[in-house]
Amino acid sequence: MNHKIQKYKSNKLADKKWSLNKTPHKPSYDIAITIPSYAEYDYLFKTLDSINNQDTDMLKNTLVSIVINNSNNEKQSVIDNNNKTYEKLLESTFQFECLIIDAFTSKKIINNKYAGVGMARKICVDSILEYLNEDSLICFLDADTTISKKYLSTIYESYISKKWNAATVNFNHQNDEPKTKELINTYENYLKETALNIKKSGSPYCYVSLGSTMICSYNAYIAVGGMNKKKASEDFYFLQELEKYCGVTQIKDILVHPSSRYISRLYLGTSRRLEKALKGELDLSSLYFSEKSYNILTQWISLALDSRSIDLVDMKNKITNIDKNLLKFLNDINLDNAWKAINDAPTNDHFIKQFHRWFDGLCVFKLLKFYTKS
Image (cartoon, rainbow, N blue to C red; front, side, top):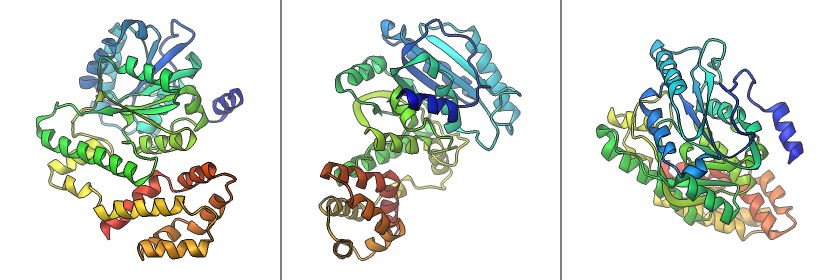
């Protein structure tokens, strides 16, 4: 792992121009909570208060990093909000070590090509890696997401007892926006029901991809190449890489409470979908996948996992028996080449892992959308 750490720091570490506002008091921390903040003055300090209410002993070994960020193409109101947030943070005191990363002033601003939540999360983590050890936990939070009083203790106890390297926690949205109260319940149900149905199908990509629910170990973060720079869906792709590397444990306790607000700079995600629903541009019920799509997914995964060493021609005949359009779908995602590599697996366990590395979360959602639309 030391080689991987050095390789990551040499090749993938975020630019060193994004530095901490001060040196931490301790050389190493057991837990890091990382928070991207973009015009979050009205929300961030409620989130920090909820962190401040954690177990006092745990907070002594917790490092919180906040990256205040914007692109080089922002409204003045965003820049003013970030300045206001930065000044208040400098004046605030907490029971935990709180570090600020400037990614919003003229010399530290994020180029518009990369500006977004993925890059912000990456800067937030990469800037504090030298203050973590190989067993440290990295928690990903959002500036508008409060946490339960047992957030840290529950996560750490699960980590120690179950020895996982990546996890998600359960969540309930806040009722902090009257206009979206009913909508958020529908949307949250869609997220959780989809994850449950994917689990029933036999796919391991059966978690809700929500940035503020993610946790991973230092080692896992390095092993998957760190956080990606995507402007949106960074959580989906990061969790997918973690699942491929080490699996993602699901902690059932409700530990985070994201905001129900509907203003967003993104073209995807909760806020954007709520905004479109309020405008009448999106019926949230249309997001649900059809029963047929889940049935096809379940049958396909079952067939695939029972088909080790089966000739590809026989395999294709069985695929056609499930549904006449399934073979076309699988051919479009390169079934022939993929199956040859999967079938070369030396053991059945390796065969199963190789299959799920190929037919990953993205493929699962492509199939569900394909059959729901058809």
